[in-house]
Image 1 (cartoon, one colour):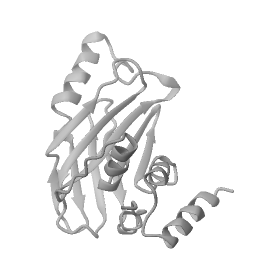
Image 2: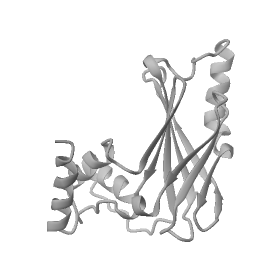
Image 3: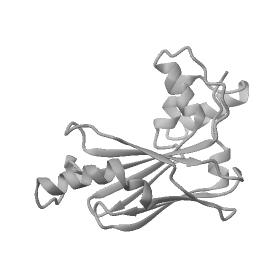
Image 4: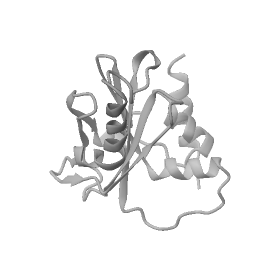
Length: 190
């Protein structure tokens, strides 16, 4: 049963020049997506997702946008989610007082981009050019930060995101995306 969905995608892609935006979004959000890497340390789950330009296009189509971005994409996008078990809000997790929660927000808004690098298999080490912390104002139990890097010189090599966790003191976390994983992404139908 667990092999039916990947088989369906393979057959769909084989019969056409891509899959629909709905199929693409279902694949992208599934646990079968090899572009989503997870690490669990204690009560904390870290997830790093490589965000392709086709993902953004599919999401725009789903939202009803008729505009198509024709500009070449000179960036790479990665989203890091941090989630605490049992639904505890990350901003208040093990915080000594409210001041520490506000310090965490300030760090996520201002400084977190200094603690993440993109390393390509070719040896390039790229700093984050821009980041966006998605604040949910006590509604959810996940911190989400989108990181934007310059495109690596060689797209067909292994890529690693190295993240230094200053929020909870868990040190360096590495999320590696192999060449095969980044090459075997379903194509979005035009």
